[in-house]
Image 1 (cartoon, rainbow, N blue to C red):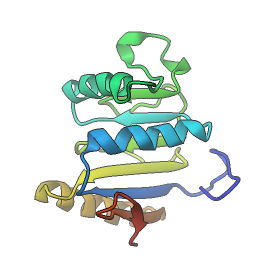
Image 2: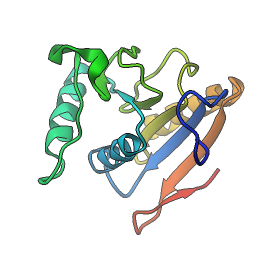
Image 3: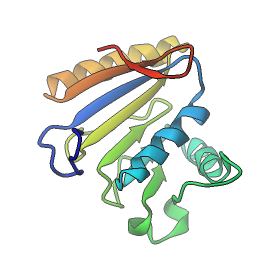
Image 4: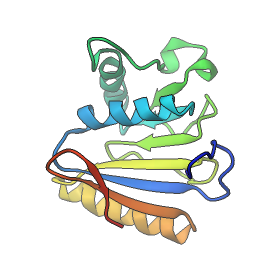
Length: 160
């Protein structure tokens, strides 16, 4: 989203691809979700399996000693109230404007979100092939697509 824009103001979905090479998902996802919340946005994190949802649930409560990220899953109830919702399904019960897709998760439609973020493991050839197909589909859908790669210093650099 552009500077000063709020979710809902963007006519076109912005699709970001984060190529994980230097840090694992467990280090990257919490910081991206944290920045999303700092901007006042709601998020859905879709994982490839229920087991992974459980692992991410634990991660977001414990990733940093001095803080946690408020979130919930289906079993927590009051789903619509959670600023971050973890799922393995293609749902959006908390009205999120940002959707994170991890561990090969797929979404049926890119519309309805301000931002869709794919995080994929650059050392996994199947994940790279899948990300290329997702990139192509997002471009064909008319989305604004960007590709981010992490430098050896840990900074994200826009590559495309």
